[in-house]
Length: 344
Image 1 (cartoon, rainbow, N blue to C red):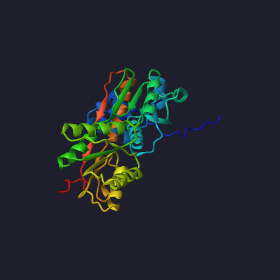
Image 2 (cartoon, one colour; image 1 turned 60 degrees about the horizontal axis):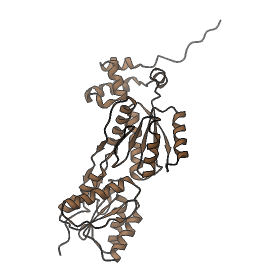
Image 3 (cartoon, rainbow, N blue to C red; image 1 turned 30 degrees about the vertical axis):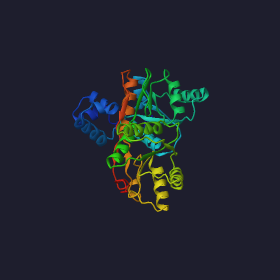
Image 4 (tube, helix red, strand yellow; image 1 turned 135 degrees about the horizontal axis):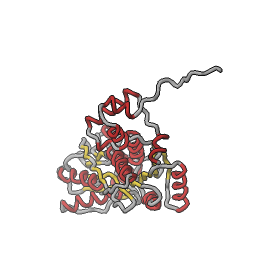
């Protein structure tokens, strides 16, 4: 009888092989793959180098049989392609991959029962281990609440508190707005106008709150915020109206960088200099803001840190561990669009 030789080649490297090369235990390799933040950086580096050297790939099918987990995370977002939600989605996907998980994604734009049921059915069919919901707007957060109790759920949103079944992580938008406003106050401005984002966005609401709190703490008059949007055209429109009404303040804090760009353009068209006549500060530190004319002072959002925090909260949820809300601090980036107020 004719026999055939296996063409499968040498056996694939195992977790034990990785442990041997790195000089650590099997359990340490597992922690690096599943919860890297609990492993010392030097040990984690050795394990990661061994994984790369051996070309190790975890056997997700075997893990599913052993642990009843698939290594798959369901991600819900609002379908927004704007800077914040888009970068948050990428950060979560990258953090998941670094922790040995894959992601599958769906879009939710409302909190209707039919929408939530469709999403839940989709995730249950894919046997996800849990769900991370990126919720920039109120409708998506409401949908996330309806998913609680079906699977472990982590909510990525600003200014929301966790519940018994809902873990929350996010960027401290209020702090970011306060940093921007305090910067302008410290430069000597006593007129700091805020041009806000849409009312149903959590980030927009929190940035209004942070701006207002900073002004109140400084004993400075708090004007009514001006509702803008998220686009450069919104900022341009608002600035043109201020110019026409002769109500241009000495400083403006725009809710995002695109609106700040539109305002700078309108001020330039009117012969106003930034920052000599009016200072402008944005929010996001979107790609290219350092090349505006002038380069834009803004608030940088640490999306990678939030992505890792979301995965950490997810692992705690899957493991049944307690968890508090985790809020990541943003960073003020000072460039040339902000300066002292003009001398009278």
